Image (cartoon, rainbow, N blue to C red):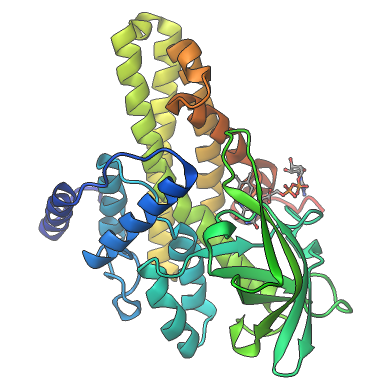
Length: 378
Ligand SMILES: Cc1cc2nc3c(=O)[nH]c(=O)nc-3n(C[C@H](O)[C@H](O)[C@H](O)COP(=O)(O)OP(=O)(O)OC[C@H]3O[C@@H](n4cnc5c(N)ncnc54)[C@H](O)[C@@H]3O)c2cc1C
C-alpha cells in the first residue's frame, strides 16, 4: 500500500483543515449532559459542513471518501482534538449494518437522521447472562398481528438514555438451535414499555445503562435482514464495531501518547531510561496499530465490509491504551489518580476497553480461528 498523499488527497486534507480551523470543536464541557450536548452539536456542524459521513457512499448522504481520505479525515479530527460525534454507534455501526441488510425503505427512512444526529442509536445486544456468548440471549419477541411484542432485559447499553433507536437482537424462535432463532430489530426507545436505568462506572459517569423491556411493540417493517437471520446481521454490526471504532480510537491513542511524551519531557521523567523505554514501546505499538487499522480500511474498500482482522486492531488498541494510561499514572504521579482530573479519567475508563466491543479473550479466539486458521477451541 502506498501511504504517500496524491494531489487529490492533499487537496482533501487542506479543505478539511481549513474547515476545522474555521469550525473548532471548542473545549470539552464538564458534566455528562453538557458533554453529550456538545458532541451532538459537533456532529450537527460536521453534517452541515458535509463531513459527518465521509466514509459513507454518496448515495446514502456520505462523501464517498476513499480509504486514504477516510484515514486523513480521522487523523485530522484527532489533530483538531475533536470529540467522538454523539451518534457514533449510528454512524459506525447502525448505518453500515443497514447499508448491508436494510431494505430501500429502511435506508431512506433511517440513514439521513443518523448523519444529522437528529436520531441517536444505541446497541442492545448484551444481557445479564449473554455477553461473549451473545447467541444465548433470552429477550423474547413474539408475533402479534402485523408486528412484534418484545420482553426482556439488556445491560451495558451505552448512550441508551439519549437514544431514539435501539439495535435490538431478540429470540423469535426458541425451538431451533440458538444461533438460528434470533432476529435483529430496530426498537423505538420512546415508549413506556422501555425503561432505561443508568449504571455508574468506575469513572463516576453513567455512560451505559440497564434496559428493561416489558411488552414493547415493534412493527414488522423494523425487522432488519429478515426473521431468523439476526445472528448474521449482528455479526455485521460487531465487525464494524471492531474495525471502524478501532480506527477512530487509534487516533485518540496517538494524541494521548504525544501528550504523555510532552509531560515526561517537561518533568524530566524522560531522562529515566525505564520511562523512555516504555514510551518507545508505546510509540512502536501505536504505529503498528495505525498501519493495521489502514489494512482494516482497505478490507472494507475491497470487500464492502470489514473482515475478522478488525478483532486484532481492537485487541491491540485496548492493550496499548491500558499500558499507556498506567504509565501516565507513573509519570504524572498523584495528579493522575485524583478524581476529576483528565488522566485519572483516562486511566479508569481504560479498564473497560478490554471488555467492551468483545473481550480480549474472545478477540484472541477470533484471530486464532478466523485469521490464522488454527483449530477451533470447541
Ligand atoms: C464500557 C462498556 C460499554 C459497553 N457498551 C455496550 C453496548 O452499548 N451495548 C451492548 O450490547 N453491550 C455493551 N457492553 C457489553 C460488552 O459487549 C460485554 O460486557 C462483553 O461482550 C462481555 O460480556 P459479559 O460482560 O457478559 O462477560 P462474559 O461473556 O460473561 O465474560 C466473562 C469472562 O469470561 C471470558 N470468556 C467468556 N467466554 C469465553 C470463551 N469462549 N473463551 C475464553 N474466555 C471467555 C471473557 O473474556 C471474560 O473475561 C459494554 C461493555 C463495556 C465495558
